[in-house]
Amino acid sequence: MTTVPPLWFRLPPGFHDIAPSDREALDATAEALESPDARKELSRLMDGLDDLEGHDVVHTAIGLHPEEPTGVATSLFSLTVRAAAQPNPRLTVARAALGIARSPLWTSSTRRFIELPSGLPCSLVAGIISLPGVEHRLFQARIATVHPDGLHLLVLDLTSACAQYADAYTEILEAVAHTIRFSDPDPNPGTPEGTSRILEVLL
Image (cartoon, rainbow, N blue to C red; front, side, top):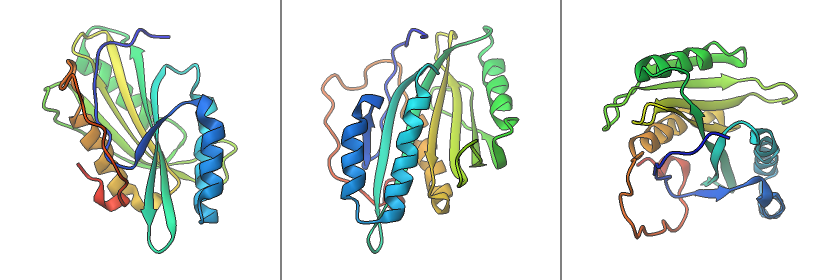
């Protein structure tokens, strides 16, 4: 496991930190949902938690956002920290973005560079992916950037079976990337309360 450098970020309302050990609680949450479709989506996302172990994933959160009239849009956020393969941060991000975009899992994707307040290089790839053994296609947005120490690559992922919210999820992940800091922005942070519909959580 790569040593995690100091970094902070903020997720919008409706996202809840989880770990593979939280599977039982998530199963209970899935049972409590009134929407069969939402239960299936949440179950698929939970199945993916086990696959994240051993892949340098250091943080995961699940997004639960009410849909009209009675439903829940679910998503899975993850942050991966890997050792940078070489010292040039722009080259590190460019290679990571190219590797993501060239993955055979993508059936369609868009890609662009993002300007962060830190000035660090950053790229976004977003679109539809088809995973082996998964019947339905998923939407995924992936952002690659670097830690200012030049030694670590940061990859942020947001995955959902609710592909109809692709644009909103892409904007959410990009907004999260803009909140990344490398020194504690608030030693006594407040805890966000409540939940929001997916189209209301843009930062």
